[in-house]
Image 1 (cartoon, rainbow, N blue to C red):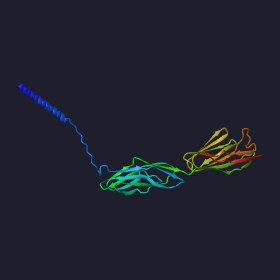
Image 2 (image 1 turned 180 degrees about the horizontal axis):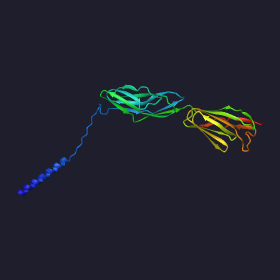
Image 3 (image 1 turned 120 degrees about the vertical axis):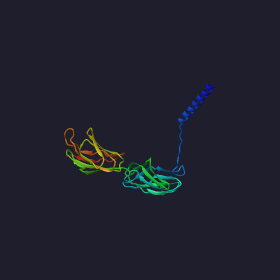
Image 4 (image 1 turned 30 degrees about the horizontal axis):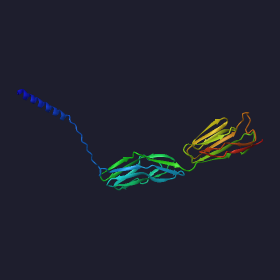
Length: 273
């Protein structure tokens, strides 16, 4: 009997120890949420607006919506909007305003930019009765500015005779003028083999000349209106004689070409000396 009682005591102690172990190792979590505004689904929202702007001349101004602010709260807010980084040519017209509950306001910008693609972010500050918030937009408004004025190209002889004597050294200077080119446009022209290029200069862009055979191929890359001035002279022919060696009609160049447009060539006439 003593052994039975002792055994029951041992079993009871073991169970108590086991229960105590389980309790000590127990782990629990409890979440808690607390709304800072009412109702729970209240928010201040925004959308970034993409815009396309067609300009016809330098300095044209466009005005329109590039951001929308939403107040989905049951109290009014005071909003201040600014560009994250200032951009010359972009001005926010209504950067500070009051926005009533459950309403939307369009933020209007005044834009005067050269042709190109621009991305702008905004900082939105809001103040309301029970607090304030500051938001940096995670989207950017894309502003595409396109110059819709058609490109123009022309060529003018500035100096030099249009009727010359054969076997006589002559020089000419002409200018290629381009207006409203697209970004990285290339003007092409060819100077025939009867001439040497003495000099050239462009008011914008870059110029390269490649010789193929005896002809000189001109490539002028530019992104804005400008002029290319070229001076040429009659060359010596393979026999060492001064061009022009025979009478007739000669092209100073083949015609400057840009985006499918081509000028007429400049023509000179050689008569027997």
